[in-house]
Image 1 (spheres, rainbow, N blue to C red):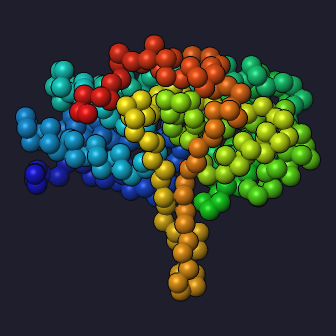
Image 2: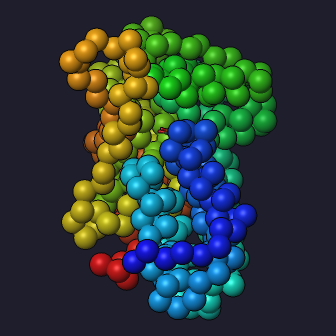
Image 3: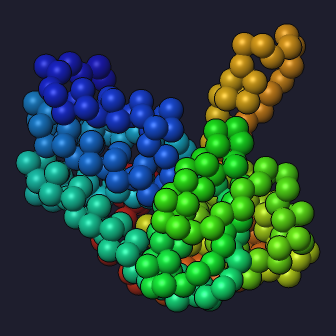
Amino acid sequence: MNISFPETTEYHDLKNTMNEIKNLKIQGATNVAIFGVRAFAKHATTVPLKDKELQAHLETVVDELSSLRVTEPALRNGLRYILTGIRLDGKDNAEMHGEKYINLINEAKHKIFRIGAERIRDGSVMFTHCHSSITVGIFLEAAKQGKEFEVINTETRPLFQGRKTAKTLLENNIKVIHIVDSAMRWAMNRFNPHMILLGADAITVEGVALNKIGSRLCALASEEEHIPLYICTSLLKYDQATSIGRLSEIEMRDPFEIWGEDAPVGIKVLNPAFETIDRGNISAYITEAGLIPPQSIHITFEQLYGKKIKDYHHW
Ligand code: RUB
């Protein structure tokens, strides 16, 4: 159904946010969820459509937003949360429902910062990969508590999100050792970090985490070097579709990010954004519900959010 309506400022803002999510100006699962949910909720509140047309239009926008970064269930969970809210008490309350979901994210984040910081020992060496706002938040909280430690971090090709991590840590007087991604195992062997902290984009029903490409290599190296690895994430990244049999999708990004116009003709460049981390390599998840083993992800999500967030109604 092709539905037309006068373009509002909020719709224009939503389109901008979608571009920023696609080109990684808005980066990391938590930020993608917060910005995507907020822009969608504002648009839903103001779009001049009603009844069936409204429903069809919002479903289309939800699909469009969800397909920008397919490995981001925290965004999808938030969009479904708003649609459920609209069905219950009308589109005028969409923005309020969006803010409620963002509050859930923010409350979860702050709990994880405190719980994660407890695990960091004074004088320790930590290791991380890519840029995760949750993992960085844990480091900042530990530094605020007066702990001194050093963080080894990878640059994270092709888009160098690791530089963002390095800059933020340095600005907060945390020491950084910055390495190329392929030096992961070497750095673990050389510096013997006490712990590896990684973020997550998605968590499956089996307790498998999906995170930036390179994370599984990091986990395999951690096994060889006997270094405990923790996944720092809100349970709002639980991919509910995996519990009815679907597989979490891995986003493939533009090959141009790796090799642009000067790439030789005929070459095939592949740019997977994420990969899985086997649950056997995860010591624990650091979540808003505390430290939990991979096996308890599904049940803990159900206890905490099961009634509030149901992504099942349209299946
Ligand atoms: C970022 C990435 C992060 C997770 C978690 O990938 O893999 O580790 O998204 O982030 P990209 P957060 O740069 O491709 O978005 O802890 O902020 O939710």
